[in-house]
Amino acid sequence: MGKRPKILVVGSFVMDQIATTRVVPEEGQTVLGKTFHKAPGGKGANQAVQMARLGADVTMIGKLGHDANGKELLAVCRKAGINVSEVLYDDTEATGCAVIILEVVPGGSTKNRIIVIPGSNMTIQPEEVAFLKDEIGAYDLVLLQHEIPMEINEIIAEFADEKGVPVMLNPAPAAQLSRKFISHLTYISPNEHEAAAMTGIKVHRENGFNLEEAKVAASVLRGFGVDNVVITLGESGVLMDTPQGIFYKPAVPDVNVVDPTAAGDSFVGAFCTRICMGDGYGEALSFANHTAAITVSRMGAMPSLPELHEVEEFIRSKKEQ
Ligand code: RIB
Image 1 (tube, rainbow, N blue to C red):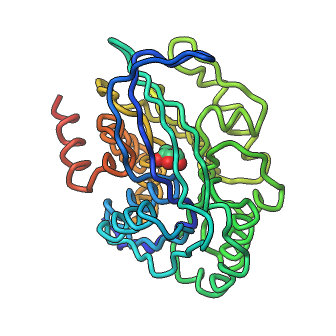
Image 2 (cartoon, rainbow, N blue to C red):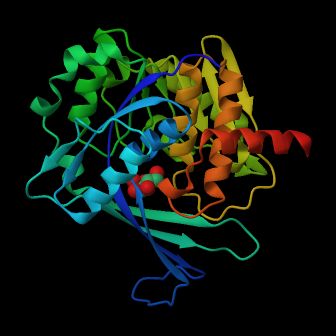
Image 3 (cartoon, protein in one colour):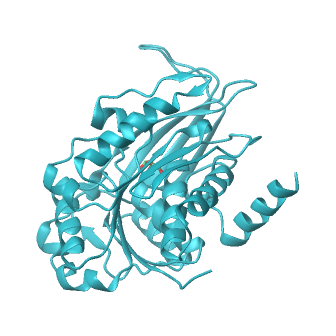
């Protein structure tokens, strides 16, 4: 394995409130659920924690409220070894939180529905990240998502591009991107819904996803100006279109999906860590698939993100099967 990469995440902190239920309520309906969990999350912080647990040297910048949720999120990030010295605080807004409904499908995969209330995440100001204009040159990669103001993402991507630092965008939740923002990206990793929202190309499910449609969506995204497009396709695996060609890795078989929340975060965090460590794309995609497979087999976002030794053991055990 290569060097310990230095990765910057500018993104969200969110405290998740998770209800599991067999029945998702219709309009006006009340149902009795099964369990309730509270767990730290947020796409930015999840990705930062995943990379730190896999051995990267991670700095996380985001905005918290002065409240108990903010304290807990910061403590988990610190415990993972993340540099949180530049984390910002909002004096009036609360720390972001989310309501997650986990639909437990008997004999099938659990499905999630998520509502994020961004709170302090959406109050980051350009002047609060201006110091990164020079400092960003010290990083091997910058990782962004869509749970902070788009203006901040655009500024950070431009700073990184100016210094020749690669930028990965995990475009979740789906949003329209400016041409200028896209021009600063090195990698983009949408799931099939986000790829459809950006390209208008729906990747249909037949037996698994239609890979030809995924290839078209990826090539349209490349046509927008992002060289490397990674489309995650859930149980159908992952497709990557690059100037070196197309890579495809199937999902890890026989995984018991307890909670799919943060699967994408775990995948993109693992992929970024491994390409920065020198893995080829095929190797990094496979490693990231295995990392995400562990994540979905456990409850909660951050609590489910595996450590490096767990991923290595899991890969060994799958090879032996
Ligand atoms: O990607 C999963 C995350 O999305 C959850 O942790 C939730 O906080 C939302 O941000």
